[in-house]
Amino acid sequence: MLRLAVIGSENSGKSTLTFAFGNYVRKQGLSCELGNFDAGCKRAKYKATFDIRHHHALSKRTREEHVEVALKKIYTELADDDSVRREITDKKASIVILDCRGGAELFLSNGPARFLKRYADAVLLVFDSTECATESEYALHEGLAKLVSKATGVKCTAVANKYVSRDAPTQTRLLSIPTPIKHAEDGVLRANAVEGTGFRELFKHVARML
Ligand SMILES: Nc1nc2c(ncn2[C@@H]2O[C@H](COP(=O)(O)OP(=O)(O)OP(=O)(O)O)[C@@H](O)[C@H]2O)c(=O)[nH]1
Ligand SMILES: [Mg+2]
Image 1 (cartoon, rainbow, N blue to C red):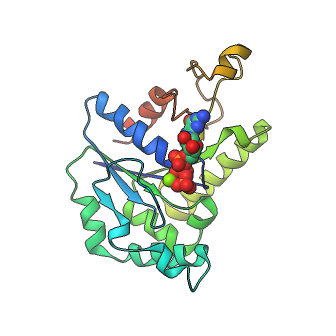
Image 2 (spheres, rainbow, N blue to C red; image 1 turned 120 degrees about the vertical axis):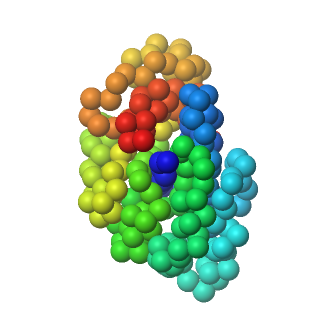
């Protein structure tokens, strides 16, 4: 079984990717379960077989403390919570995707890093490629993924989401029709969670770790 944690900044498309890639994994003949690890999630985007909101509510804590502080505490508590960890480890699916709240910076700190170390076998650091003006921003996320790997001991790979190939004709890009996504030479995977493109490479990447 592979526990795949999805992390990344707000609105990068973590939940959409979790749901769509989960369906893709099932189409490849593997069983896949989804876990919501966003304690502040207001509306679920998919049917999760694990929901952190049954254990921790972010809104209760944020009345008294800053959201980042509250998140750190939740992940720190989870890291040592063997009963919750067992709920994930005991799943029978080939792949369990953990849709986590928080970006690379959060998971570089002690408690959250230990959470990933104990709950995940691999991590995807999702970022919004439409917010990247230059290739160097891809390199930045690739670097952040490496730092997460180092801090957690779990392999973390950057995924440029909302990606539409720049080689696509203008009209294709404007209409956002699925375009073939070139193999990532730079170690950053490309995907478009809405169009479902880039999933073949992403699946190959994940399957190598099974
Ligand atoms: N065009 C495009 N839109 C996307 C893609 N993935 C996600 N979105 C949109 O981006 C928005 C945010 O997606 P979510 O999946 O909620 O992102 P998230 O990272 O889970 O967000 P939070 O949990 O709120 O931090 C939604 O409006 C999605 O429809 C994509 O690949 N392409
Ligand atoms: Mg989400």
